[in-house]
Image 1 (cartoon, rainbow, N blue to C red):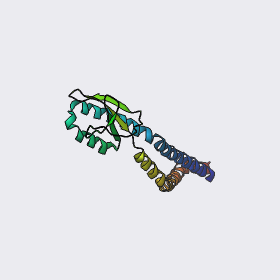
Image 2: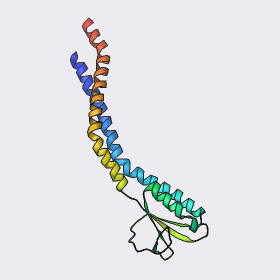
Image 3: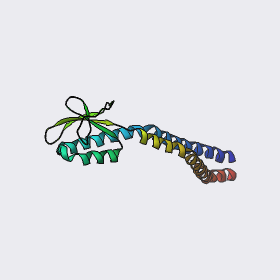
Length: 166
């Protein structure tokens, strides 16, 4: 009957390790999508703030947004020319982004906010996850094995006693 305990142990160990691996893979896969969705929400909130402010008072808003989100931002004027969000003067830069947000300041001046999502933070997080895999794997294996062993012994003991009596 010890094979019953061993089979129960292996089943529980496999189940708990599988769940841990699936959870880690989900974190790895869905991290960029979550960040992008948050970026769009934050940008929409930022646009709402810009609509309520005057152009001359917007510099602090741009600085705060860039610091909080770590995104690179640019403005396009009515002629689709790149301008600095701080000085509102023309700049020479090649802007390639699909994230264009038209808006107007409270004074009525129309601009297009260009948000360039910086992948550096996502890459840092992914690298941190990769570096933690050995530690997490070791702890998961130890905890899964210990809990599977305790649970398999606890649940099969009454069955083994009944079998000996019979």
